[in-house]
Figure (spheres, rainbow over the protein chains, first blue to last red):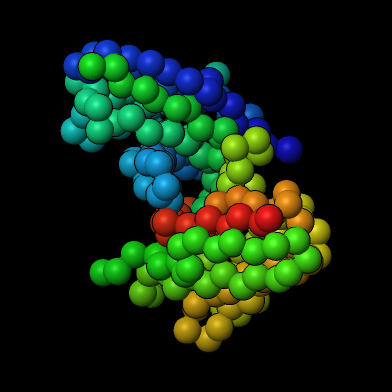
Length: 110
Length: 115
């Protein structure tokens, strides 16, 4: 079945860039998403990318998609302590059957 | 526009009891999905409802059930609670589910503790 993998932990210094990586297996994925979860909260949609795009930029966030390698990344520029959270990569097949990765816990050190 | 609302926020139950969780989707959204989140298993899909019908179901025992009302509000029920049911239960809504640019919007969740 479909699978989404992410590294579980990432630590960066405040002001540095963070890069969170994700790989997926479903070649029919049409949309790929990044969600953010802060402690005690639900998942907040950060950004998404259509599978025929290779890059999307939204303020401090840059999403890169390598469809050939089924690799997705989220770059956060100028990382702040408020960015500390768990980041989930997800894919869907035409808006159905969302599959989420295990989440990457980002720790931002002062 | 109000977001996805889940009630209650916290619940404490004992083994063997049953529990009902409630979810009100974003106004105009007709698809409601439920997920269980635990530290060990991550996010696991429970089921999805659209137009009062269960459209998709994850791999959970029959003790987990749900329903959707005509106003798109949804409830999930867990009967004969077990210690392993302790988790954060998340509800997510989307417009219709199955459209190519569909996005899921999540509520804050109900934290269930089974003692």
